[in-house]
Image 1 (cartoon, each protein chain N blue to C red):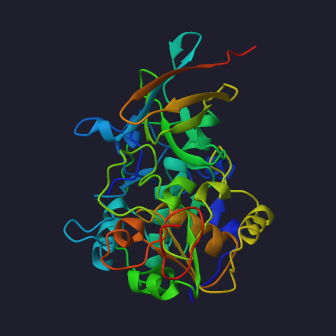
Image 2 (image 1 turned 90 degrees about the vertical axis):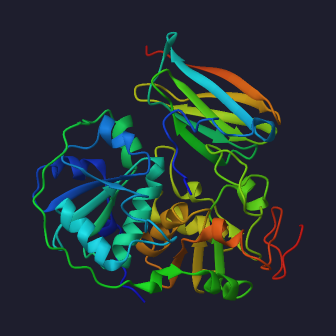
Length: 103
Length: 291
């Protein structure tokens, strides 16, 4: 019944990963993990598909479908950062997103 | 028909909340399912409602009933005369759900914090871990007001005749995903949407920071999507919280009468035996199909 996003994204525990197209990543600023950043998943049309906040280690996880996705990151004190990622069935795509540093 | 409210009576911004942090007539209420969010930090003075353990019946799939709602609010120290300001994570999805719920049970003055937790955090405003002590009240609810709640029979009757708004993402609407992508996709219900429902994702009503768009932008959004809002309208999503967000837009911000939230939503409809389902990006005809 859950529809809320736990910090960092839902666990893979008990999930049949062969049936999922997982996108994982970490958000960094000056090489350091950013906790509490908002990571938004956008489809090919730019439409919102999900959003999670990053964990204490800057991590996030999304359960997508095979497609090219855009990730858009909002964090206090930073400009918006974006990255694209290709998700494939039964695989976990990993992406690092660096937030621009101030100044 | 339930009464209509003006935008200023239904929605407050962070400045307003900041100015009323010590106002004894105002109670801030954080609504989340991930209760660790409240434990790590919440707005000063805010109490917590757990979307699941506080607001759902522990046995059957339904709300808590009126008596349980009265006990809950009494224990939290919320009185009938308080101005209740709700906010939460997930772009206020669950806060909007709770708002709708407070209206079902007739709370007079309930408002939503525009942008919820996200806007507050992005502004780097103060969060605290102290849990406030509020003296218990004797809360008296009314209702339930079923003029703002739709059930599955209402949705079936609405196919091809009333306005059905599916507020999930385009991929969920088309049946390419079964849940928002922060959740595993293996789900028991069938994919797709209710035939003749149009797709206006909840997110189009909000800015990236979670605040609502202007009334003029919101009107244009639903008009350009072809929604006939002069007809009876039912909003649905997967479990009824994103559609509570859209119900809030249509009924509370735009002041449209006859808008209901179908909280059974796709987890119920997509599990029903023998009902029409439409796949693909088109709304489809009343009998549904593969698109």
